[in-house]
Length: 168
Image (cartoon, rainbow, N blue to C red; front, top):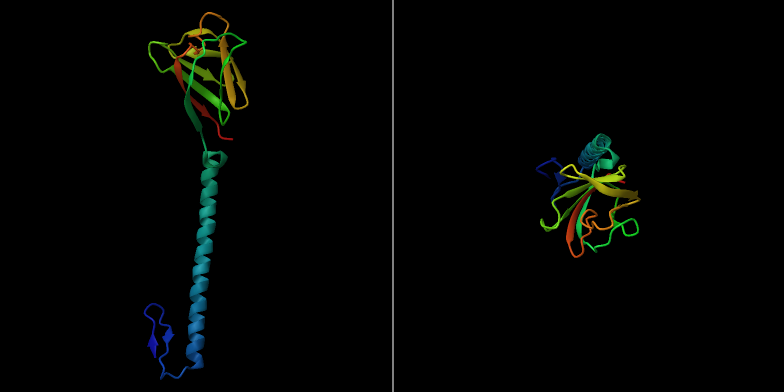
């Protein structure tokens, strides 16, 4: 009788007499090997699930720690509380940065921080903007009705924005 290479299982040939002991030894060897593999797989799956759970807990909120959205909009030239500039995002923004794409349109990058009702330019100037935060949105306007540049809303000017937010 021949034997398999890896597990030495019997491989009967036509002229071999099949013995019950050979057959039972083979099925016991298969049963033991299958059980060993099943136990190892179960242990590996349990270990992996624990590691993923520990990593998720360490990172917070199931492994996500920040969301980002970016894009552009074109200014309309309108200003004031009746005409706020606004963005709607796929998450609650925590910080929004806005800058005119054309450097000649504005020298400032506007910084909007959730919880703050005013805006600040990167250069540190405060310039009369009021900010309102909503669910997945932010809007802002200036009380200076002739300063569309301060509201990041000059007519025909393209503005780029980047928004960062917490995961949901």
